[in-house]
Image (cartoon, rainbow, N blue to C red; front, top):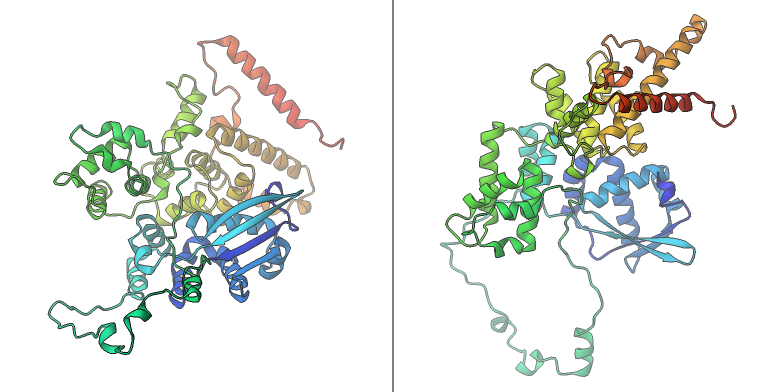
Length: 469
């Protein structure tokens, strides 16, 4: 929650080393807003407007003022700010001044339309958000400019000295002290820098990728930062492991000693089309990151097998399994992607959430209900599959207790939304949610008895009244 990092009285200093031009505003409104949502967009434009109104292009306020401007609580603003950071529109720095923290918001100009549509990830995310090829092409074409072929035209442009004939050569030299002082000023001026974003959670093993490359491939090419970043980005986007990416790179660098970025993109897309029949790539094809997996060896117990399955299966593939092999409905794909992109849930956690939703909603994935539960799970900061399973089991126990209490009430007193929702479940819940003996193994009965004892103790602790009530 936000109060662990930020409170309304904390000051922030917002600044921008450039200004938004008309095209920039169109880019933020039409291209970035579908990715970050209206609230994050409003927060960004509010900060930009504040800075633009200040003569020094820098403004200092408390976060309380942002709450007043936007009409949002600080927790929501904190979450929306993260979207701006992730998409590359804000860089956040922090400084401790005495007993208080001061936040610095370095506002970044958006990418140009050309750079945005050429970006491998942003263009695909935008396509998925729009959901229609025709709408996407129409939007892209709204930024298109027609160029004139200049190859056969004669250049008759006048040079400086052909027009300004009165300028004496001495006037072109900055020898006067006042002139030297003026032109060598180190003041920071407006200027369009490169806007970019980070893949902090990328789990692609770059060292393993380098190890897969054969000896004839020049390794020095892959020590370059821009090459490494592109490879990481494409591997993330198209779900390629180090071995697959090494093969793609070999195809791209086959007839040259330098890595051509356009050729690498073409090779990746060609390989993807063969695998995915020309569908846009999906975030939902990712699996649980290696560092967040709890089953590191061959699974032995039923619990380990279940966890391993959740950790090594992508949410889209898991949905297909839940549907007994049927093609996943595009609307369900979109819900899965929002669970991962907007709520930042890990793939394995999403799988547990999907099964939980699946068995409390008659095999239906209800969008609003899914997002409500996802928000609850996000606030609980669930990162691993095991954490999610324990949390889901606890929720099931609470729900069952609630339903039992509702049954004991008079009929006219049990009309809550939750009781209506819980009554629609017709499918039996998975064993790991309800059956304490599902993970029993004959290999080590002592361990089983000890685990069962701990589980009973845990349940007893959960049933104890809290706060003396």
